[in-house]
Length: 272
Image (cartoon, rainbow, N blue to C red):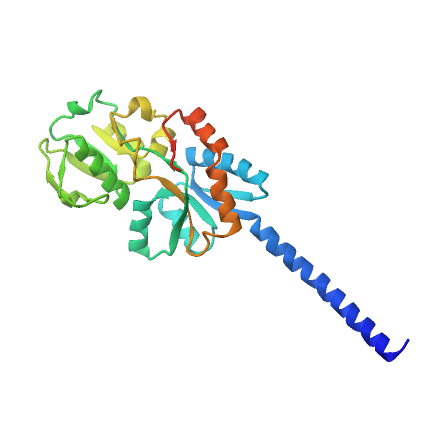
């Protein structure tokens, strides 16, 4: 064998080994692209995520569903890289979180909408609220504002004009029944309902407390053109990644839509 031939063989062998060395790295990249860690609030949102997970699996995407019980945690986990995406919030909530904490998080695609409602175990009609009634509302800015808008839309309060989706209790200008507003953690409101005359409760927590939004809510947000559609959120720049695109597609599938109709019977609706 000539020196040239040996050198050529050496180069060929080296190139072949290099090619094999690259393959595991490429496999790792592919594996990473086919997996995604998704944060949701436990309960009905977890059930929906499990349906989306089965749909995504058909497209070669593995979803690891991570559950939380506190609204503030999924964005924190997403921001620091513990999650690849979350699916639990609407735009007013994310806007408030970004303003407070500076998160670089964006929406990637709509999922569901859960009209918020007013519940009471003491009253049968919203109009029967007594003077000085104690009313619970969520203590986070977006859902608190949502609750105030619902109460104002039903004539209980008057708010400063122009506050949009996020008024605060300081924006209450009219309160003819002199009701007392108690700001509590959203997750605690169903547990405190017996001690209140009523409370504005997010649908996921209402369902978790065995309340039926279609039957038990005395008043409720509009079910059409609702600005509180939930979405899949990701870190800015990740919204176009193949795994994220597959995740959105799985949530916006006919299978998920059919599940919402069968399981929740109109209490939770598609937002896409």
